[in-house]
Length: 172
Image 1 (cartoon, rainbow, N blue to C red):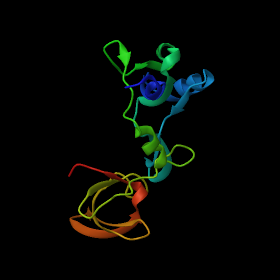
Image 2: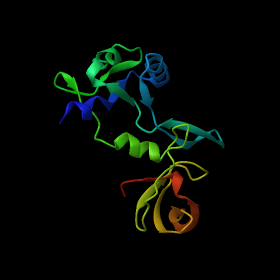
Image 3: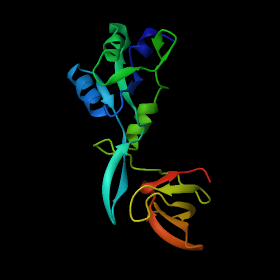
Image 4: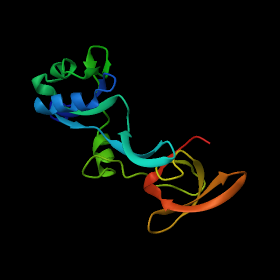
């Protein structure tokens, strides 16, 4: 591996509990490029549903570090950051293209747009709407990206059509 390929790589920073905003703000102030993907969900508050967001990878964010300058040591002492994910004495870079691929599936605010490769037979969990947290099976996906799913409700299977963006793969 040559030096040019590792000069600016993405690394994973482990965060202190409930500190992602603090860590992100402090890393940005220091000139780091950060990426903290989120997902849209629906939370239930009493008998009402309200939209919300949560971290796609709770407790972690991605930081782009210039390896040649030794910037990684500053990340470990940033308020809100516990440490960079390491192997031995040095942080481990993410696989090449991982953050770019994640960003390609997020909007401008960093919110995950969902799965684009949902296939018939996949078991999924709905993340928002009145059926949030329900498990379903994908029946088919149309050309517009809408998924036709089957959910079990009161011992009956019901067919629904929804945007594939609110679906997450689940273990059956």
